[in-house]
Image 1 (cartoon, rainbow, N blue to C red):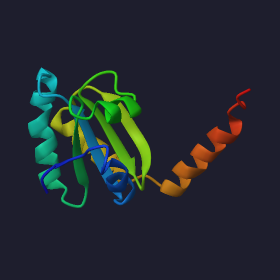
Image 2: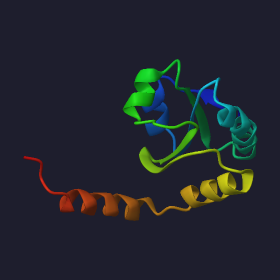
Image 3: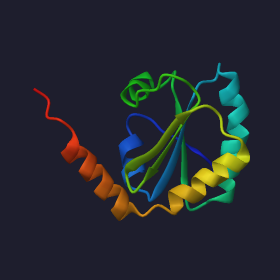
Length: 126
């Protein structure tokens, strides 16, 4: 499956409406972004059951700011609407494949439990 363009209008719907979503934050002027694009596209072809989205940080500055993007490319992985991975930098094909396998293998009940425990342990803001 080809990658799809994500915008401020469709981002939440895509992330919450699909089991696994990988998002590449990029810009046309970014050399590493252009180098990573074929790897990301090839992975999308190999995994038609996963949604691969791309956010053009120039066209979607508000979305990039909301996602706290400080460096591009940045890759994010969502599973069942939960952000489970976020890292700047282009991944080589083998590392991207490993990430896909790890995200698919997550026990989301355990992930939600850990998130709840972290939230309970966080000090209350004054």
